[in-house]
Length: 65
Image 1 (cartoon, rainbow, N blue to C red):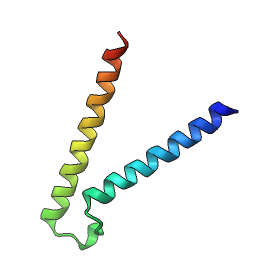
Image 2 (tube, helix red, strand yellow):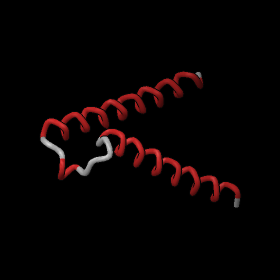
Image 3 (tube, one colour):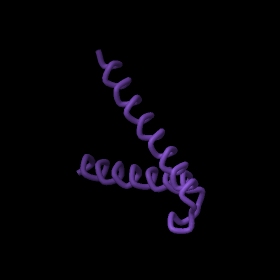
Image 4 (spheres, rainbow, N blue to C red):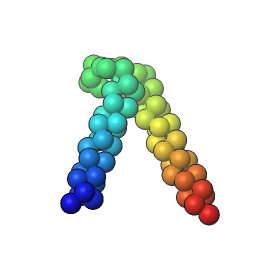
């Protein structure tokens, strides 16, 4: 039972963290209200976070050896 609760809480936390990162990348604005330049900058921010997450995942894998 604890595993199921932990799994659900982990998913909720990840979803909340992702929403927060997207909010910060968009600087609190709606994508429809942004200019093309602002949209591109927000996308670059999200891509940077994605690469950072991938690097952290790889580092954790190497740390196990």
